[in-house]
Length: 209
Image 1 (cartoon, rainbow, N blue to C red):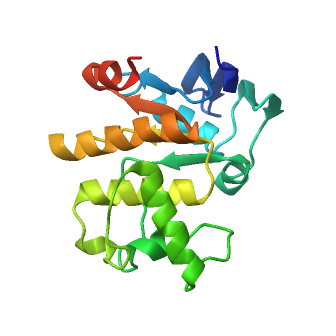
Image 2 (image 1 turned 135 degrees about the vertical axis):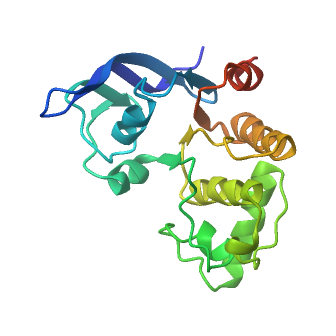
């Protein structure tokens, strides 16, 4: 069995007013796997995502990332270690092109160069998907925007993708495209995915062997 890339132990978040937003979250995410996490509204899913992505600190518990205990101070800190979060409401720059969005947060010197085009094609090959790199994001349907977010995460060399309700606004056809890309990333690149949903059928479909 693969060793876990992420281990969460008794993670909790209690706010100063006494509100307990997360209690005793404990699980492992193994390398090159899709790990489903399901829960109703108010179960603490969003709080967990914020902690794992470095947006807020935990009140207690432990996060072990690639064998080291970690406590990220910011989303940039988490991203630098190889964790990328794809949110339900896709935070892309709508007036920029697909390619510009994909490399927006990348530290690599690809932008406005021949090498950027080559790198973009490599990312498309990784997910088994085709999209016009010069298309303006605001002109794309929601499913294609979700794929741009996945490409953006890969451009940042993410080892773990945290996907927060990524199919909530997608059609069945768009959902199938996203699922196929997720499986391809697991199988061809060894990427781990933490897939968060409140739909049991999605979890069962995506996380089965």
